[in-house]
Image (cartoon, rainbow, N blue to C red):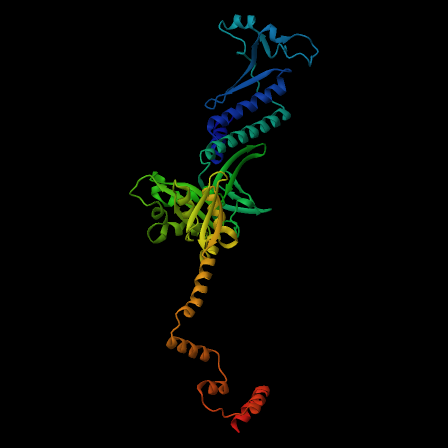
Length: 435
């Protein structure tokens, strides 16, 4: 009936290209043949199935009837919408009593098959219908295969090639499927060129009416964690665990890690020798800054470390409102807050506490300065006072006439001439001095 060499070649090729198992391809052919037979020779409501033998090329057709109980169906020709029972169709249903005559252990819901006459001649419409059924079955099998393959990779990093950018969405060829990276899942400032290889985090596998959607992300915090997992063997082995991540993609991130083995330094493990491990991750993320701290069960210590590189003087916790107040010196205030509040914002996200930054030390410094000014009056030393007066005179750029009076020497310029020199422009005063 079929050219076995050709059909087997087509089955093998499609199975290899689309990743559809051979059994699914044969099942699609059987479904198409059953549909064509039912359209050309079947009766209304009839259930037809086909069995295709890929080795011999023979096709057997069967009619299937479902075993029902008389209480479950009604026999009226006109359908009653209010009746929840099934409408009995002799081409589709068979009563339990009749089914037991054919099969002794038959039960309600079983299927009884009856052989049908073989047909080899199908019309054009039936053949076209069979073709559509085969394509639909192949697409369904391919979709199920993609879901099965990439469903196991959900939550991992995948590699792909950039196809195109459309309306801000990035389409990535992953081999057997196409991944979509929405604009908000991309790292701000990154530019992607078609044909460029890219790594991304597969965070969702969705099956819809129009196919399988693989959602990708490069801004997800888990992407950062998976990159460290690839670079740090201690994380892969479980010796170091990443407890929390706060990330603003493209700008800055904070990671809190803890070691399950007391002999391992979690921060050093993530940084690597001479910073090689963290540098590799930063280069993958386009130079994104990464702060690595050690996770602590003590909230105050954890918050203090999270605010690094700023030095915190003290931490006050408000358990009721889950709020923390960090006191820092004035020169550390801007460092603790960060540009645009980024540092304190990431620290709050990392720890889960609301954090307020309070500068201290400004008033104390002013009091010390005031005390230093008043101190010479209490124990004045004539020698030190004279030296300080001399310094003040040098700094004040004293006029020559005043200096002469101060030293006790006779003034060479009279009062009227001094007033004239003071009122005259610079040029004129210099001329008079020369005269």
